[in-house]
Length: 175
Image 1 (cartoon, rainbow, N blue to C red):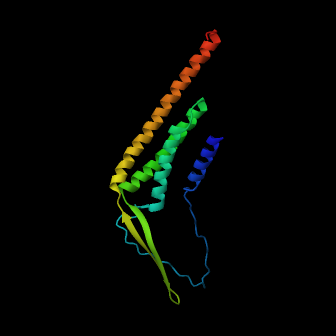
Image 2: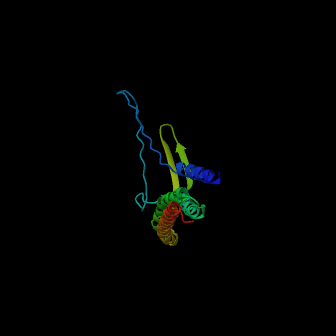
């Protein structure tokens, strides 16, 4: 019961990070007055920075998935399989956290908007952080996540071999 609740919590967390795509598909006739938006951006990273909240959420999700994969009880074959899948799910979160730490993290500190009769301007103030030490810790965490998966796969193989050996011994009549 507790395992189902943990898996449901993980599923909810994963769905919260799903990317969203939207398209604007309105057509205008020849007499319509259309205003075109213009954005000016001064970004030294050329858009390579990672949003602050997604960066933190990915670090927490990756760490949580690794801990969950290691801490879940393993009494049946399916438990080992689920733990391997959970540990593999941690990889992209660890990679995203690592990428943000090694490049830059974007934190929005202010938003302002001004309007006149036919013009609207919106300005956002961003601070770009560079957490290179956390990025290198993320590299270690990514390597550790792969190591955890290898460990769980080897435990699964050992459990499967022991299970097959016990099954053969039962068939032969040996206690």
